[in-house]
Length: 170
Image (tube, rainbow, N blue to C red; front, side, top):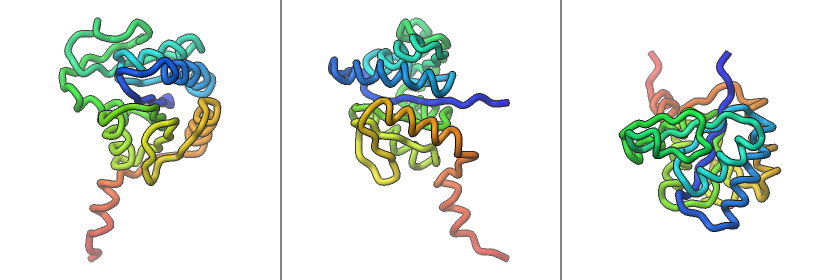
């Protein structure tokens, strides 16, 4: 059986407040799901991995470069891709649900990928987008992720849906 996965996205640089938010979210998510995927570097990614490991979970970092040692010290499994920012697609599509913390354009692009590929996305202080669920606290975001993981069976990528919707029936 394939295990459920949560991805957390956010800025590679973050304020102490966002770092604390990410760490707390990581600890709460570890009670909900056993595997966390992130971009594997510093800032928000490191803080959420640190919290998730403290909660007993396994962390995976999908890295932009070729060197596993670029991963933050809380990554259990480092996956070097050598594809730069294109790795954001992998961070999103490997998840059953994504939680977005504050970040810049990279975080925004990952949230857009969620919407494009039909991956549920929860915004915790991040960008407000139509189709994203907004939460105010790490506990609320973790509870929403748990609900999504429990009730969602499959996802239908919007790319495929929009193409099939326009097909003519014979």
